[in-house]
Image 1: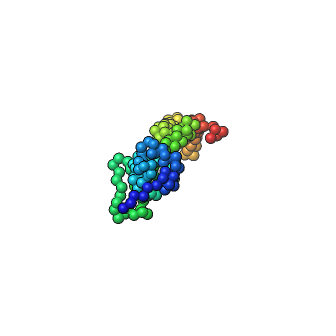
Image 2: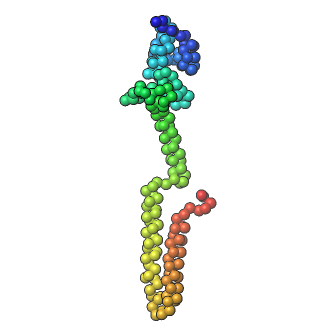
Image 3: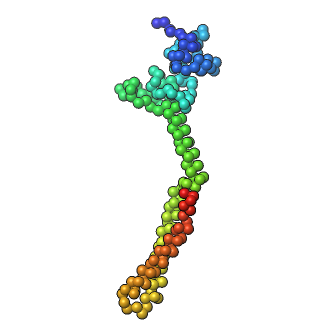
Length: 190
């Protein structure tokens, strides 16, 4: 069986990359040559093993016969069962993990920017704020009886007693509302 050898330019066309990348891979020893020519089958395997995929690479897993654009990470194995047909989804490779990491980094940067602008707060801060607000509401409601009782002494008419209780409840809730409104940002800044 004769070995089919290609020139550097022909191999670059075969890979769908620039000839400069092929020359660089040869110079760095990532792919080997035979008298200046390249065996594409051997070089594809060496390329996949020795070359790191770029994050902006348009190459997809399963695009080449050996997934040259996405070498396997430690512990990964190529699937070779009935579900490893050419149309079946391939296991994620280096490029996929790198893209996921870059997406996570971008999301973290967005959250950090929002936090710096004061538009994003932590869960613990929100929970503490809710607890403090509910406690302040409880305190405002609990004093209604203490404030209304002295005013109800000597009153026999239920409407007058009701009026006193409603008046004290309104005062307590207005005070609570004023305290909460003081904590809110100005409408001009939101």
